[in-house]
Image (tube, rainbow, N blue to C red):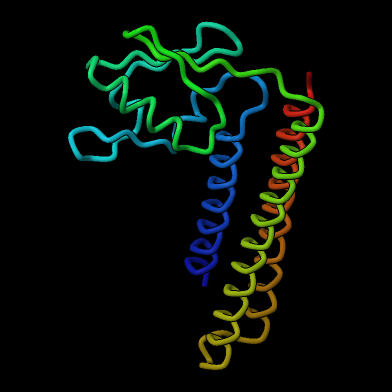
Length: 184
């Protein structure tokens, strides 16, 4: 039974990790190279992450600089950025691509905070679904006489405590990201 519970804890941990990755790609007015993580460049016919074909740096708080290792990639990288949902137009000088992040308006900050809360709610729903699956698995084991009633109750209690712990972690992540977004 203990391995089964650990399996569900890993699933909850992955849900939290996914949420943190999504939050990393939400820009908060400061340049963060993580916003490029989901963008793929056509590199000789293969979709490749920008970080694998260029040097990405943040020389100023609101500027990301992308220096491709091969000059012919500049157009491909620009095309990939323009096709993404980043909402920033890249500029280049023939050697380096620059992404200048504008100051976020109050309205845009509020929209981003709403998006963060929505993603947090989705993560909580996913965690509760994992709890339901875990409880169902325990009940099946109980029906098949692999677990006693006491073990079933203890397992359900342990899963509930684990669920509460992860919901609390999601709430903390949402609060931190919202605070970061609303900070001018």
